[in-house]
Image (cartoon, rainbow, N blue to C red; front, side, top):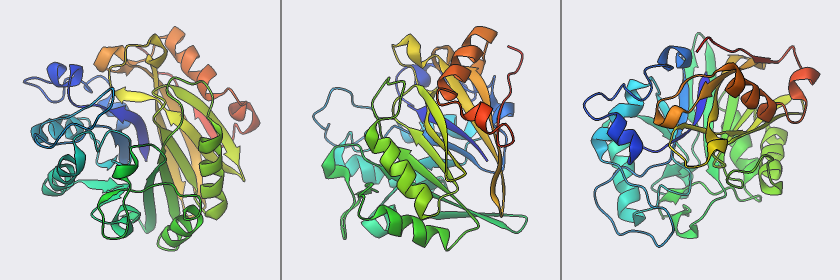
Length: 305
């Protein structure tokens, strides 16, 4: 399995991909190749709906999903703070577009049970499950019984969601959208959600929302990546320049190896990181000293720019 961070399909990415959906990801697609290639889709896919009152609203045309497909990504999280940017109509259009395109998606559904549902993938006798959760607002976007929306990370429900999912698979990955944007460190909510998920049986925890890389933690022997940063997403802050691909080798024992490949966001055209950017990525990921503590489990592999 390989995983990257946030994707926004409108704005600069759409301009880069005009006439060639593969253009944004061409320099790194081979580095992403895996049985499961995962990312956070932080864009509602719709041409309809009413704009939700907020600072930033995103919206992409359904054909822009070709940009994600061209990168080799085959699983997306939609439990995030932008999927409701154009209300319930925009949200339901997004689900329809993903289903029409035969995408595997997590973290959202037409009611709470379907939003919390684990997606299962089978390879060579191994069953891998992925669940998506978010703590972000607006609250109107949270799925409830009989109400469509995203899977909210309710602390009273996290253990049950994770335990039910783990019963259906050998390896369980929990994707979580939450935290503080541009923060170096995970906040208390991120830590609490991650620890609760691991304690309930998750084998790997992948975070996004801060738009910057945050540290890796080993908790109860399992890896937590608090934030994978951006992928196909142009942010004005230079802090978002370092990105990373997390590549997990999985077995019935869980995560056998988790290796990070640093990237340079390159204003919407990610490329292999220079030595300078790679050093920044490693420093961000290793802020808690996890690489030195568990060299048997964690790796960091640069590629020539």
